[in-house]
Length: 443
Image (cartoon, helix red, strand yellow):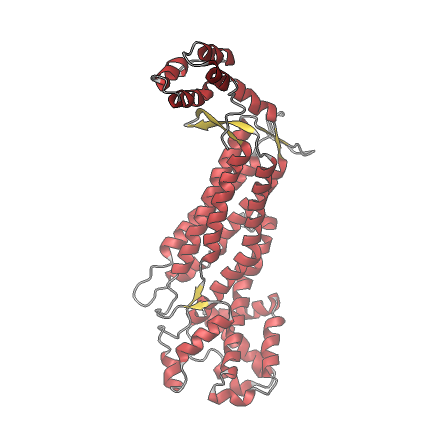
């Protein structure tokens, strides 16, 4: 790890460990093998006329074992084959053919990869990787973050807090509601993210099933392709070039950018609340906040999260803008770019874990919230002027503006003195006098 170029496999190796089974080189090879094997099995089940006598044999057991017993040593064999072929998917094909030959099924090895191009394998393997990584690793972690923020919102329900618009004191709010702002935003975007369909490309060299049709013209190959994709839990794009059009990955990337932007917004707000001492942070024995200043307890988890979310979004944005573009029926630029699909998810995973860690460390400092409210009695001016509007009082806004705007400090006494000199009935004055920065919080 000390010699890793990327911190994803170095410093943050432990945090990104769950993604290795989906986005590592080993994972890509394993998914390719799986797609090739499932395709061969589907040809047997069709049945392909040349393979119909295999339905009652043990070849499927051999094929299944190639997948279930696949490990890093098997992946290394494929990498060794690739040194000769200089083609990664062809190396997978030869590996499977060799395994079948060793198990006395050599007669049928030419039906491995029948009629396919490498992108039929890649553009089915990558969608599977993406789908399973999201459902098994990313979505549960994002759900945990949302639930944790919502739990905080519940525990902070009704706690009054001075709002700040344009960085200036504004009408009071509640801490719980401000947390719920992020819960609602995240839930809305998460729902969109979960609804996005992941597609695959499966249609031969240039997407028309040319080789399939000319070899077995009686079979409806587009229908077969649809069934095969569905059996893998994917949707097949009907009209493609040699490669997937990647519009689905672009949509997914954009959705993750929006999720991450909401989280960046959240991290910055919590960072600011900590700087305002609305939150203290739990101290962990042995940790150092600053190499020079012993007193410091820095909000590093939220800073770490913000930085990694930014890194993730930079790559998500590039994937979404680059992948859907290819010259004519294909160029190779998508191949090297797509290998980085796991990078933004790695940075997002680090960030999500940092947010969880950071939220676990914050401790509410309610006296600080109350102190800021007490120092800003001017914020009840809005309440007063609107009640006066209701009572047809002349120019209430202007009256409160003259009292409060630009003043260094407006105290409770200033507000109460103003109310007492108003030319309104006593019951209106009583209504105004009970308004405080602590109770003027709306719903």
